[in-house]
Amino acid sequence: MHFTLVTLFPEFFDSPLSAGLMAKARESGTVDFSFRNPRDATTDRHRTVDDRPYGGGPGMVMLPEPLATTLRGLREDAPRGRILMMAPRGRRFTQQMARQLALEEHVTILCGRYEGFDARIEELFDIEPVCVGDFVLNGGETAALNVIEAVARLVPGFMGKEESGEDESFSDGLLEYPHYTRPEVFEGLPVPEVLRSGDHGRIAAWRREQSLAATLRLRPELLPEAPLTETDMTFLRHKAAETVERPGRNLHCALVHYPVLNKEKKSVAVSLTNLDIHDIGRCSCTYGLGGYYIVTPIEDQRRLLDGILRHWTEGPGLAANPDRGEALGLVRGAETVQDAVDDITRRTGQRPLVMATSARGAGDTTVGQVRSILAERPVLLLFGTGHGLSPHLVAACDGTLRPVRWMDGYNHLSVRTAAAIIMDRILGDCY
Image 1 (cartoon, rainbow, N blue to C red):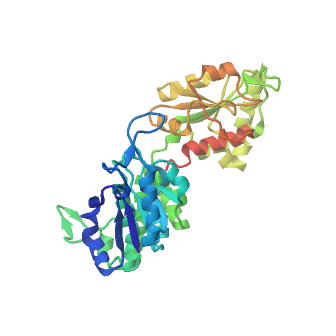
Image 2 (tube, rainbow, N blue to C red):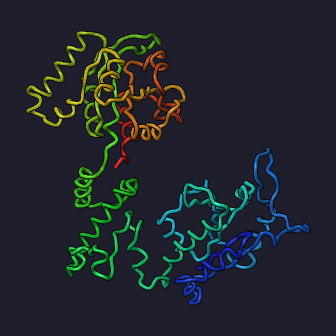
Image 3 (tube, rainbow, N blue to C red):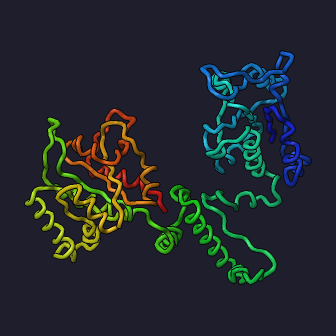
């Protein structure tokens, strides 16, 4: 496999590409490297490769002409193959992408400096922006080394054992299990007994569980896409119940029946809907919310709610469907939104941040911000019935959540659907 590195600092790679397995792979011809410096394609006395950006602003931008000349010159020496550009705005580099690149014979990597490349380079050439993480480096060379090492080690012949390249973190979507070697006891800490047992079945099972536990603890966002067996899921379910702090306990929701809008945009009160009570209650229980409030100032509606809740939490409904009874045990009636706020304050010791939800407007708060707030204080989400929460209630809230489908022209969901989606976006990856 051949890597061509386009960089202003070819010497940056001298040591990393001449050490360890990479050096051996170069000696054996498994991988090879060539370097192109855009300065060599300049024509002025100072070998200028950058200039000030149009429109003003800090920093300098790499000139398009030296880079374009360099890339076109590669055709004369060797195929360019796929062209990657190291850039913070690029596609996230993953183990899956490393596997794909390892199948290529030629890969060209552009290492930017300053504020990056003139954007017209991407219009002239088929370039793939790639990002190795959500942080900023002085240049693309360090990022390129990440890509080179991750890809090269998957090329046949690079590793001492071919399976060594795959039996590691991210190879199966999970973090790797811990490793031990001699001595058997180090500073009072022994090697786990199972690894000394000689029972390969037990060892494999232990390693799998350790891998699952590490991923749950350190990188839970990997789990939704990881290939998991039923045994894996059972283990994770029990492990999460024992160890994971659930942020959902700090999230509360209220279904507001007054003040809400009707079709004429007038502020009105609307009647309870049995499906709203049940379905949002089940969602609230599934995602571990601290409570679900039904807000209505109408006395006969509150009596109706009490009757429904008693049926499912104390009466015949509980015996017939205990799961439904558990879900509706979260439901509380409230005459006003302020009553719900006061109840949460009393139960948690903190006043909740009150967030409105709406299908209209831009919203000033994202689900990620709400998720962060839950670590510090309770949040009460207000969902509107009818045609949405009244403007004066929204204005009295601490913020408004961005609409579910804010980029699309059609954004008309039932309140039950919207509540389920928003809960999942806030808490769905909380493990």
